[in-house]
Image 1 (cartoon, rainbow, N blue to C red):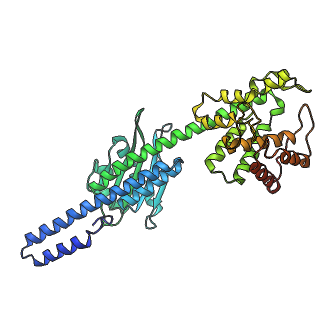
Image 2: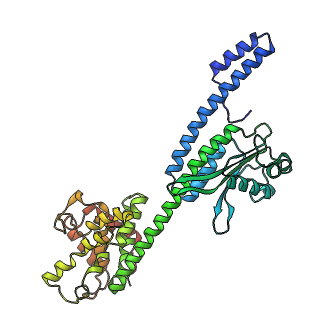
Image 3: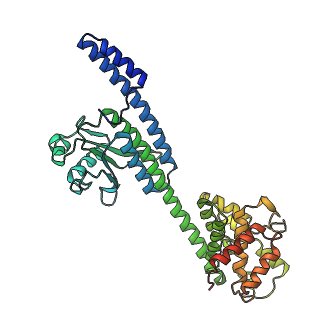
Length: 408
């Protein structure tokens, strides 16, 4: 009996046993056993459908490509009662399948590992045919996975399901989930194959999604890096400033208990907080003396310019909102909109404090760096006015615990 299939409910089982004991003919007993198997089948499909649904949710919530593959293999083993499994992914450059994740029972030796020629043949057959391969219940090529082949490896049954994602770009063959067992009391069945076909389709979509997400994140980081480098090329005094502000902001946000996702967003926004200075006139940006009223109004545009620069990049939408508020003040005296209090995100407040701190403790064209004590006094002086008091307190606590970031 397939070890996954649950026993019928106690009440139904008792009724069948009672009728079986009262039966006089072998035909009646056979019919009752057939009824028991039918009930087992219905229960099995219901239970497995629940597992597939739960597995789909888990895969949808998993972002890392490696984590998705690991979850895929674990859930496949759970679905079918397999004793060993691995995932092979298609390498487009090498034009071949490569093992990426494996899980094996201690009874399986490395001599029968995933790199074994038999396993490769089965995986390739399932991948290129685009169909689920089951042995010995079903087979496509006895020379590849016939009884003689499996006997040599001490295997009882084999199942391989291709990972095929149906996307808006068409059908994408990504890889194969391979499973096998040694237990002679448990063969993979047609039901196992159908469930793995459905599950593999869900898993393939999750893998394709995680790959796309990874590609977007790569593009995201490349964009941020390119924008920061463009700013540094224009203003040598900004060189290193954006990175230090981002590091200070990240540390402060972590100290305040921000979630990992918000910390990533905070770090990126901090790196970009001055990017609008690309649009500021060099004569104003590098002026060693006091700015005129007109020059001050011109340099104030950099917050709006920062927002405008990233406006067309949809994956920087959250950062854009933070940048738009980077020069607003806690008491409403900032610019460009004069927003205040809770109207401003905590991320924007953190960047303000980190920016002010690094500006005060770094040497600029118009002044030398402040001592630490003087910078602390300035933050406290403007706490509750320009700066959010909770952020100032958290930032100063973080500085005492983690120390300063060296400035160039």
